[in-house]
Length: 153
Image (tube, rainbow, N blue to C red):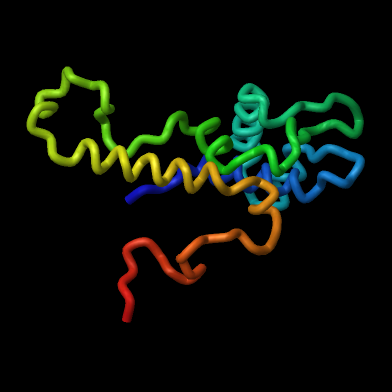
């Protein structure tokens, strides 16, 4: 099953929280975000620092300090956030250029899996933080109640 890591979950929650505060004067502290979503503060602090290192957040010092988005919400995608936490998207251990694999010449799934990987990436790259922060995230052809692995009745 394809699944986001807890760090990516926390990063997305934090980024959405900060996107909804864009019009407010102050930044949000790690403690404020952690308390709002019941996230362990130590883990959230590491997530936020990783987002700063990846230039998705800026750290603001001072009494009204905390974290702010480094770019506008419409210039940050879900793919940006997930890759900042978990690295490049993969669905298989091999790559199109990995000729060292023992099954390279006979593998029948490598190319289809890389096509799936590209579709996942393009889908996550098409959804911005601004869209995630609104109440309606567009999902072409997918009902919000359709789950992966579910079958029509």
